[in-house]
Image 1 (spheres, helix red, strand yellow):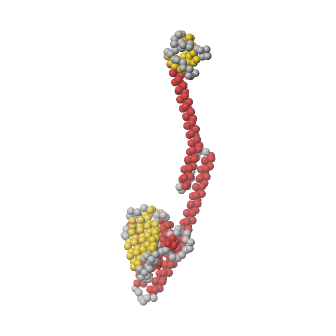
Image 2 (cartoon, one colour):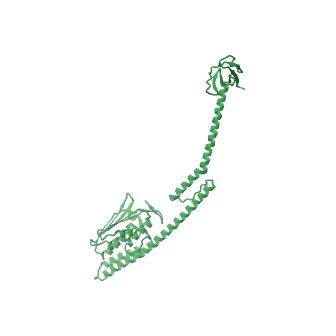
Image 3 (cartoon, one colour):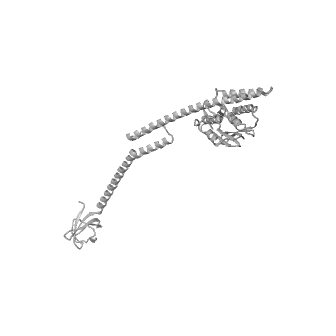
Length: 375
């Protein structure tokens, strides 16, 4: 009812008007171009929509600008509402897809990556989608199986190391006793020697220490004392020069494995004296890295690459167990058992020039019975 009809002749003058704003005979200011079916323009406070009729007249619908602008505003508001609702629906669909597909897939990817990095904790998240829940349950089952396999492998490895170490201990101790008895026999054949008393005293101390089962942990200070006694005993049999330098310090009281130094000296005496007849032993601390350093060096025949490769093999992988190098293997295995990956044993050897064995062990502090604290 707000629109008023106007009839306009070919000269663009009003012939008929329903609007009080337009009078018959009044000229329309807009010219007809004929390029479009409709033309719209403003005149006399109204918005006009002009079209040409089939009888040669022009017809126009006039609506007050106030009403026209109000209708335009309402239309724009409705379009904005429609666009907002459409965007909200679209966004809701995207969020739903994300929660239903993308988020579960990302969760699965994260859990698979965690599993690859060694995280085997049980997944407690409930995604809310049955299919993905079943996949997560499968991952949990896989993680539990891996943990069980790791625990089983760890226990088997520990048992295997324990058995191997016990076997090596039974090889080392009789081997040492046999060599010592040879020395006693040789000394007994000599005419009365006052050194026998000190010799037997040192032998008793070493045997008591080596064969002792009540303790599996010693200290560097005790190891040094036992090494000194062992060297004094072996001097009665071998003719060699010893250079032994031990740096005094609290690090010597740190706990360590039993029979750490003696097997290295025994190996050097049996295979490394050569023609030089010289043995060197250095023990000192590295306060910056918090390591204790043990170096045993001889000037004998040295080791071949094959022998070094054999000594560096992991526990239990030797193709053929041999009596040579038992001491070094024992020390390596005990370091692995006591320190894990925190200890280093390095063998440098040049044939015809000698061998140097270097051990780096972290300085430990006792926390409580059965526990080790690596500084």
